[in-house]
Length: 358
Length: 214
Ligand SMILES: Nc1ncnc2c1ncn2[C@@H]1O[C@H](COP(=O)(O)OP(=O)(O)OP(=O)(O)O)[C@@H](O)[C@H]1O
Ligand SMILES: [Mg+2]
Image (cartoon, rainbow over all chains, first blue to last red; front, side):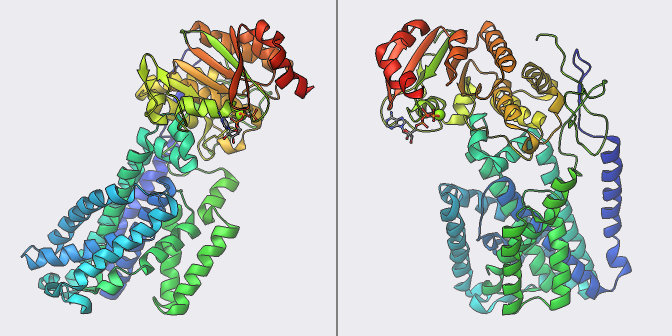
């Protein structure tokens, strides 16, 4: 649109269209990985997309919703165990995984009415309790192996090689879909409200943002994403045990990825997932010292680089790569009065103010 | 308050002016009493809903959304509080940015703004929501004479548009030129209320407020 002063508001710029198209092509290329690499590598890369998915979900929850949860493993476990229950009922493996995501959404919606009454630390702990409740529930159900766990046999019909490839595609699709949904959500009017909540909750409320219901939407969406991650984790390892799938270590990993990458940024968690993936392949996944190392570095980042790697880079260079923002464009060059204007990485700066009364 | 009317509130530090404004805007619950807006009791309405009804406010200590641009800050007001979408939202944003002199910094992240621009952003954001009553908390502090004149002109223009103003300000000589009613508060109570010149002559007011300041 254009005003009398010749101003318009721009969302897609030429640069961001080119950049987004390249990213889209790259993601399409990633879908070819199972045809290129051997199954063991495909399985590892599946793990990477699961990490990306989990990091993006925890980031959206804590970074945009302001909801710091240490119990998101509840939904990872629900996604995995719902898949088991559905396959026992005769549903095909990958369909069961998709339906499990829906079941997670329903349970997350119901849970939200209990936990969203609480604030801050109380909410964080309550989510941990929720995870424990679900863990206990499956631990005592002998039809899914109780505490000793159970194998996912439904994917066996595809054979190990095809199974790995299908699981890879399933996980990559889930991660891509989650990021796309997040992207379009952040680009929408609701996304502006979410970013406002991220920056200052009560100021957002004073401008008409309904904080509670916004948080509920974020909570349900991100918990559903964790359910997808849980189903994919199960499909990638083909075995599930209550103590490990409902373990707080998943949350520890998510917090690490998000804090190192950059809380409340779109790209940061993806970077964090890559870093964790590389660490896992270097030092192995598991062991007490591994988690102590993760925790310590998360704390160090929180203290000394609170915006994470990506947040620090974008602040330093005033970058905004993901086109979720708004740019005011005008025909005239900046006035001498305001030398520091329009420090965007692209395009001309804004119009000077017009003297015309509204 | 009638449309286009303006009330000023003065009082020493800690008199409860900001607290009163918080109660009116729904940021704090009242310990006693109720808040009415357009004939209905809105005491139990949330801050967000009161904004949507038409009660806008600024913060004494500006609270910009630091990681969003100035335009995006205002856009939140236009879309959430003002319920606008598409080009109507853009137009509202551009016009309040122009009115508040923020167009040249529209694409800057709010974290890079100085105090003057942050205060203007408080006003612009509140205006973007399309308020009928605007609650202002010390938006005039630290202004030069010329900037104060500009602010007075802006307020006058808003009143002509029918927006009612409640304005808390320590700079009394600026405030009295903008309002037709002045309230003086001290220690959580109203100690004087009336036309500005009468209130300023009031002995208790001089004692409680002006006397202590000078
Ligand atoms: N009616 C009241 N009764 C008792 N305490 C009150 C009342 N109103 C405000 N207070 C308390 O007084 C303190 C200062 O109030 P407030 O911040 O509103 O002052 P102010 O008038 O805005 O001061 P300043 O000029 O410094 O901004 C707060 O801690 C508040 O809780
Ligand atoms: Mg105050």
